[in-house]
Image (cartoon, rainbow, N blue to C red):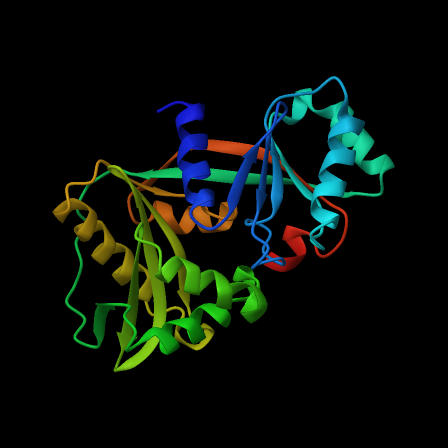
Length: 260
């Protein structure tokens, strides 16, 4: 798959929880019900423009009219220096990020039988347990961001959510986003006190079996950084692309600050 195919998967995922508005220079994503969510509210710019100030003015007016902090996700940074320089002149913060894109090699992994582990679908009966886990993960943005986002994803037909119990205690979650025959694994999370027990591997293996059983063509992950990329490599995910991106924002924390 080429870079445009990767962007297509990413855009389809974003559109599941955010309204997309295409322009002549890029795309605006907005969800007024989740005003503090970075992914749900941002401008996506891939190609360079001859008039960056016009773009900046349009973006500021659009988001500030909805009381949302304006922010940009910028690709092809080498050709975007005019936009980046103009953003700084407009008092935007800026950071460079590396976003790995990984694809499962479809090889089955050997796995022992851990009798303490049970994995089940998230339903209305265990919804509160799953929500507690995801709201506890600071990288997800905390309760303010995750509570509404989780509700929307749970009610969306393209998502399948899983919860893992260890010794009967709900302590890890993950989900699949499915579009046509492509699957994307998201929101893999474990409560801090249960980390280091191999529970993420248990969840990933279970999801890989589900992908195979349902005859889906590919299983993708978009790790938030290169450290998480190394974790997924242990479970058969090969890095097919490393997207160098810029995140520019007119307020709030940087992504690096949120991730710690």
